[in-house]
Image (cartoon, rainbow, N blue to C red; front, side, top):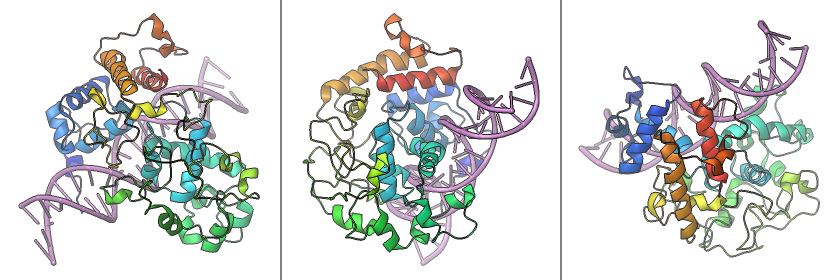
Length: 350
DNA sequence: AAAGCTCCCAACCGCGGCAGT
DNA sequence: AACTGCCGCGGTTGGGAGCTT
């Protein structure tokens, strides 16, 4: 197994990134791309390991991140995807443009889990907690043991099948079931060069450009959990298993992130792709969707260059018209706060 | 006001898989 | 086949912010 020898080297910085480090990394990647991550720190003049650089870029610095709070539609989608994929955060993130696996993982651990439990749903199995009491090992009431309570290991397949919230009861709702049902579909399969992500394109989501509206895949059970749990409402247009009409905003009309998908536009400049694959070091190998919207992609590119990069380079161009970037901010000189706010608003500003 | 507690999230860690030699 | 280096993933942690007492 490959060890990260760089991590053991002396004198490499760890912990929070400084603005100067961010600037160096952004400058380097915008100019040269990341190439081999292990060589990035040296070339960029950073005393970090390549792994740290990669993480910083993917989770925080890359321009197509949406950031900001998750919408209800996004949370709903995460719950539904988790019911199918389990803790495959990278695969879940692949279906949420502008969101990182880390972000989703954090949301799940800090918020969604709690919400599900409050509603009597086991976050690991997506079954009602009352049903699980019969299956769960004794002494599993504490948080730790509940968290480690693994769907695949502990839950009888039949139990899953009869309780999966968004499908009917007839076929066994195992991962294999979903795979068999979707993977072979040419309309819904995104090219996946990386074996880690064989599942990433299997859901009939609206991100696939060729995706035709269809209701073939899942029949709803009128007595499903959706009546009890809003997240499982099968009539939702954002339900991945009931794709939205082709020209409809995936997140629904009440979402102010009207440019949600635009962050993945890649026809121009900074967002240019490598044959349609993500150019910024996302390792998921997922072919970028929705590439037809070149104008908006260019707008995002302009925004990045005009507002975000100059700020990082110490040449803030934020003017009166963008004063809302600092709305509610108490300490503007706190770098991370400012940065986060800008990236947050960068994703929402349109 | 301050101490204690909880929550959130950026970042780290360790591992598995893959490719190259 | 064995080894090495790198990438990417999921789990975990540490510290700051906010809330409560």
